[in-house]
Image 1: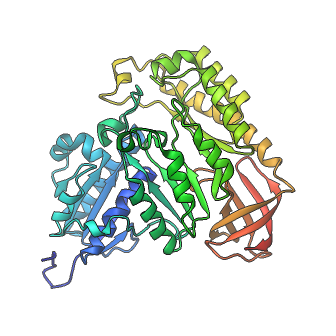
Image 2: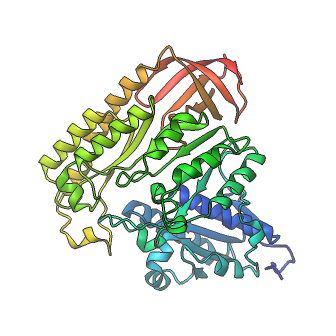
Length: 441
């Protein structure tokens, strides 16, 4: 029997998602299961008509943790004011700090970890429906969706708390992923973004070898999927047979998200990354030679314990020479229960911020050069949305939310959201392109 209000109306549930794309997928699976049990549920509804709130939290770094706590407190206040009936919290923050949070925020009705979906469903007298495996109601724009190929991580990176919150690496069976991709395609998805804590580890647990290339081949054969985008590839032990597949298959984007974190051998050793600058440079050269025109996205961390000015200068030199098409920079966050937490957090916050700004300024100059070289080219663009008089889309070299966008003047052009268009680029800035449609596909 489902939960009812006193007036006899069925409760409405609103799921709030914080953090990364992996959390988005978790929320989508939760919503699919709730709807499969006949429960009225929405994702981040702006209407103030929900009786039950589920907050899916992030606990990765300090800023993300604070955002999660602030969101929980906001809804806890709403509950105490009688505006909602129930408040449940799930996700990484709940997994990592449940005991402390239960004491600090007692108005939350229940806390759930990252692997306790069946327990959460029981709060709604709902069953985990195995027949819904591979089915997913997406919360992103209909034309693209994230596909989580594995959970957890076995890497020993000194700064990372992911294994604490997500457990060891667990690959999702290939058959389930192909089925899920086919279901997404039938529902209008044209682009799938492969995500994991470490996508290059895929298959080692299930198949006793790395089989990411085989997975890409099978997903590439799914009818209706026009772009496949690979995220979160770990550089150490990178399965180079993936490159041949990327070069041969037209619907696999020439795009690779490979978080490198640093380039100084001293810092790479402290971070337990299992590689060196020279090995990284050799890998980048191989990737670019085997997949000409590929866009490589990376992320860097500044201010890790022990990072000297010389280490930072080496990182800048590496970024200058590597000329990444896309790059993000984070300041180090001192996380409990990680190996780095045993070290002194000896880089002042002001210095961390200065280094981040300096590195991003360097990257913006590189990005402007790369974007300016696109002027005069015609690129295939997936139209994401219309906003402020522009149709806004992305090329195969750009992932949603984090990368460049293409702006198309809506007063001079017409496009349909979720369609591809050939766009002639006539202008560029550091992080965006501007163009006109020359042919609608």
